[in-house]
Image 1 (cartoon, rainbow, N blue to C red):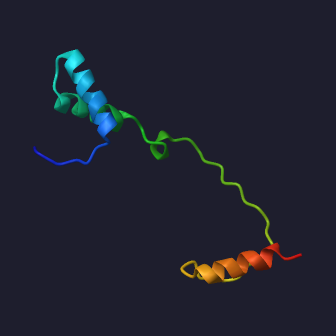
Image 2: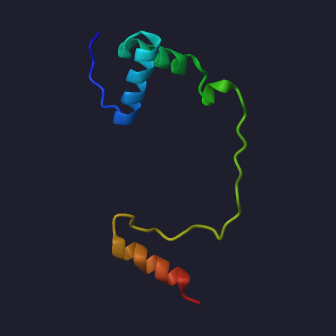
Amino acid sequence: MRTTLDLNEQLVRRAKKAAAERGTTLTAIIEDALREKLARPTRAASGKRRVLHTFKGDGLQRRVDLTSTSALLDLLEDDAAP
């Protein structure tokens, strides 16, 4: 199957060099790398338990409009004031 990928130029150069050294094609190198990556278990599928740390805070925080630069600057200035 044909597909188009936007790959890092340096990575492609390294893959082409590896393909030439091994006497194979760039496609084969990419397919092998993709198979190897997909065969590895993901972190979530590894079965390891994750410990989530929680911290007590000062209660609820003020609502902040993250799309407003001036609101964020005001909040930062308020927090920095003695």
